[in-house]
Length: 325
Image (cartoon, rainbow, N blue to C red):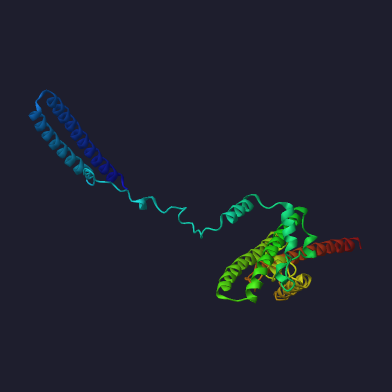
């Protein structure tokens, strides 16, 4: 807001405030005088003074309403309702919650989520539900030997912990698979509804398994150079975390890099007849081309300088021999 407009706005506000203070003072004076008259007068005078007092209140309220512009007096017995929408949406009410479950299940799940399972209970449950023999994807992918030898001890411990979590998820999915098999063997409308819920839960667990594998791969890829990382990160997750044929993929990537480097060198223009000048623009316009030509330029000038010094020495030695003769 410009300075002139802001000053004018402040002056209007101050003027309204002075009018409001003046009105309030007059109203208080009238109210004090009316109350003193009501104490000394009779009942008739009391009623008349009260009527005049109410008239003053109405005039005072009218004056305040005029100054406030939007303030309306509250009627007797009228209930003021504050719209809750002005506070915005309740963040707790917006959270989606499902129907209640049995109290015994709810209490146990809450305890397990907050304190975890006992170490022995966790081990016995994981042994109780092994992975089905025909589901290879439930087994956590193993770390490639070519990668493990390059990792530090902390990274190996972190990867082992994530792999243990994956084995625990595999045991949970194996436990869900048991009632799913029963429902498939005895299909009905009721069992199909239960089967749908179990299938949805198993899909979420399978997605967590895949996300953990990608997280393991991303955390270990920081130890690789950029060329190898581009190769291994695009490989599908199989029995091994970085693919089953990682050595062949790395070898292929190195050969491709070598061939591409040779192609770039052979595509450079011939520098045998450069002499003391460079071409105006490199053929490829790349940084590698300019660096290569600059090196050749320095080399040719150095050779030329050395040749000129050698010729001067030969001339001096020839003049000395001729003078002696």
